[in-house]
Length: 177
Image (cartoon, rainbow, N blue to C red; front, side, top):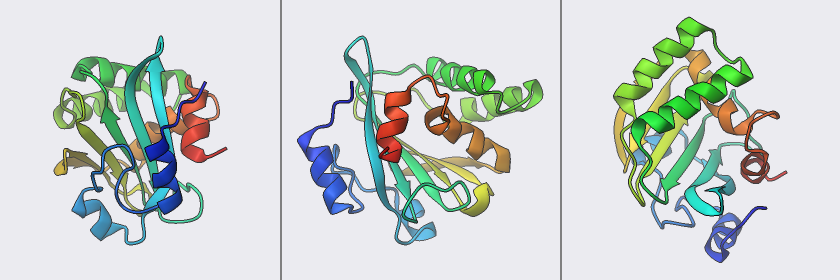
């Protein structure tokens, strides 16, 4: 069952550049590259009722399109070990068959370099440029680096947005369906 806070609802209604749950803005690098970027949907991911993270999907159009700039803003609600996060992402990509073994190994290595361990209230933003040419990773407002494989962004976003994702409630909330 989806849980949405009052602040998240207000944030969706206002559709400003400040994330409803944190009061934090998207990193300036994202806003500069995607003028007009706005929230589409928000979600809470829980495991056995315990909140693990909140996520917000940001888009430049009226709906999510992989060909237009978009971002996923994740705020940790507790410590998330780096390797667990990366392994879960790779396993979901493998289950969805969004990359071959060589691609998954390469992406895992790149994510290991760019994604840190998350602590409570840490912000991790994944931003994809137009037509997924680059995927930029921001941690607490600072750019950590980028991955230039156009297939990576699509594979990563499918973890949350694919119709057969393991967490359909998060998908529905992010896409507002």
